[in-house]
Amino acid sequence: MADIDISVAGRSYSVATREGDEAHIRHLESILQRHADTALRASGGLNAERTLVYLSLILADLLDETERNPPEGVSPVLLERIADRLEAVAAALEEDASEA
Image 1 (spheres, rainbow, N blue to C red):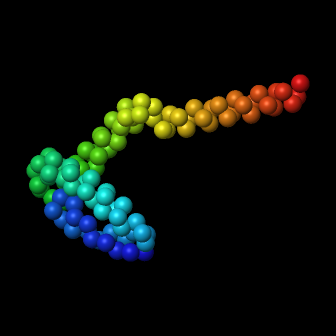
Image 2 (image 1 turned 60 degrees about the horizontal axis):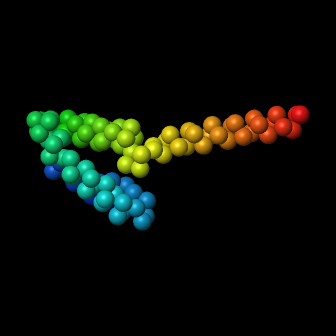
């Protein structure tokens, strides 16, 4: 494990990460930083906890929007569900064919 320091909404945090994941954590930090000013304004700058709650809500809203309207047109979650159902139908058809 490696510890790295990240900055979110003007505060520093030490984060434990697996070796080799540091670049990914830095990328996530940059995503948080893009929305940190909005979260700070929404929280009134009262405290870090409230700011992080607003930041979480902003990111959850973006995630929800992306899941409902994916850029590719079809949600990966929906595709996975469809694939699971098709596999179940195929298994049922195979079972019926072997019983006949």
